[in-house]
Figure (cartoon, rainbow, N blue to C red):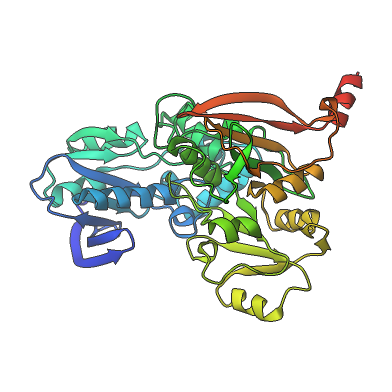
Length: 448
């Protein structure tokens, strides 16, 4: 291997911090970029990330992997520490097999192969990367030893074998998505990686939780996504007080779980009342993860143009009706908001039409976070597959009911949660299960 040579250095301001960028190139044309903050020459215990190029994840934001989220998380942590290094290794795409072969491997994964076997089916190694050049870059920058940000023990071993002193391996915690959780589990089971989202939902407070058990068996239909209703309420079933105050019914640990649920979903949906009342952002902020598409149901386009839900932190779709004012459509469209028209209903917009449009757009999982009117309408229409209810140990008294009237006169006619599981998040209790109507219970009982 030819030792990489420093080609150019320059300041690189980014939204995550102001770095100094050093570009190294070998005689073979391999390029490694070193993003540096603070004085690292001669320093020990330098917080360091060696990141393999992933165009689909880093640049295009693909949810098939967690590479982009890991890169941004590492840059943020290095910037927060005030001293550190991120080495970005080009030529490591697809664990070293190259971009086109990685895309071919994706096709095989869609046909049932896991990320490990897909490479082998292409007659390529499951792992083709070497970390010698990255180690040379670290030494060229004068780093004495590193605290390595990685979930891959083999990366630490590779750097050590190339002469880098690794004082500590620091896991990169990220929230799983329903589209990449299988990929992450394969890396854990077959390649020895640390699962970034952790293993347990219950237990001591943690930055990231594995929330896949809360989501259950994700089964999108051909005509609509898998719909998960998420509620946070008081012991007496209130979403808010009589004055409309709802911050915060749940504790910080429960809210972190809620953000992980957003990060696991394709879309998060609310009614216009939630936007007007809470000015909700609906982004992922409390855990490292990708923000889902934000969906607002607004039959008259009352959403303010300065609402947080319209900012550029995530994509936003607003569903409205043909009677909505044309000037409001133009104002929202000029902000980069997708405005989609569906037939009206007694409650505002046709929920079946909204869900059908989302499914046709590729949405597999939609997380519904309110408000009460929207969740009630979805339940009444039989459009909720899964319910996740967080109960805080508080009593509010008069206030906003979590769920409105469903026209149920007898307990025997009540909807139930099938296969319900109970978890703790701080002082809050989370109950999750599949929504089962009485007719489904009866049909199951009559089945042979």
